[in-house]
Length: 465
Image (cartoon, rainbow, N blue to C red):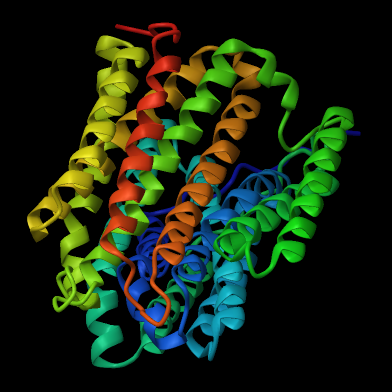
C-alpha cells in the first residue's frame, strides 16, 4: 500500500518576508568580525596569527555543515531543520557576545558557522511552497537580502563596538536572528519530509575533514613560533598527515562520500580546484591584510582607523563582491568561462602587486580591495559555471562540493599565511608589524595569484551563448 503525501501549503508574502528578515539578520551576524578584527585583537590581546584564525573559523564550520544541512532538509523537511539550525546559531551568537577570551569566542564562531546552511534550507522551503516562477524570485530576494545584511553588519559593527562594546556587536544581530526565527516558525507552514535516498551521511569523512582543517589552521598559526616550539609544530604536522591520509582512505571507500575524490581525476575538476584554491589564497590574504593596515597607528606608517572607519572603507569592496556574481554569470555566457577567469586573475594579481608598491593613501587600499573583491567574484562564478557544465547533471553536486571544500581551504590558508607573515614581521616588544611585512604579504598573494595563469590557459573555453 502506498502513501500519498499531501501537497505542501502555499505561502504568502509574510512567510517569504520572514525568511528575508532571517537572511538579513544572519548576514549581519556573519560580517561583524571582519571590520572589527583589529579592535578584537587589541581587546583580547591576540597575535595577528590568532586574529586570522578567528576570521576564518566560521567559514570552515559553514563549509562542513552546509552539505549535511541540505541533505537533512531534503530528508526531514526544510523548516524543521532550519529552526534547529538557527537555535545553534543563536546559541553561538550569545556565546560570542559573552566571550571573555579567544577560546570561548572561537567556540561561539564555530556554532555561528551553522548559519551558512540557512540559505540552502530557505531555498528548499520556497521551492516546496511556491510555483517555479515565484520560487526563483523568492530565492533571488532572500539571497539579495543576505548580501544586504552583510553590508549592514559591516557598517554597523564598528559604531556598535566602539559606542557600546564588542559584546553588543554580537548580541544585537543575535537578537534579530532569534526574533526572525520565531517569525519563520510561526508564518512558515511545515513542509513534508522527502523520500530518503538511502545514501546516509558520511560521518567519518565529515569528522576527518574537520580534523584536517582545524589541524591545518593550528599548523599555520604556530608557524611563526617554529623556533620556540619545534616539537609542538612537528607533532601537529604528523597529526595533520594522519588526518589527511585517513580522510582520503575513507572517502575512497565510502558508498556516498562527502567529497568524491575520484572526480579529481577529471581535468576540468582538478583545474577548477587548483584555480579556486590559488585565487582564494590571494583574496583572503588581502581581506586580512587591508583592515590590519587601516588600523596601524598614524604615528607609525598607517592610518589609525577605528572599527567604524574600517567598516566604511570596506563597504565598496562588499558592493563590488555583490555585483561580481551577476557580472561573472553574464560574462561566462557571452565570452566563455576561460575568458572571465583569465580577466579576473589578471585584475586580482595586478591589484595585489600595485598595493604592494602603493598603499600610502586610504583610497589606494579602498580601490585595491574593491578590485580584488570584484575579481574574486568573477573568477568563482565563472569556475562554478564551468564546473557545473563539464559534468553530467547527476554529478553536479559532487563536483561543486569539491570546489566548495577547495575554496574554504584556500581562504583559510590565505588568511593564516597573512597572519603568520605579520606575526613574524612584528619586532620584539612592539605591537605593530614592520611595513615590509605588509609588502611581503601583498607580493606573495599577487605572485601566487599570477601563477594560476599557467592553469587558466589550459582550460576549455566553456559554454558561450
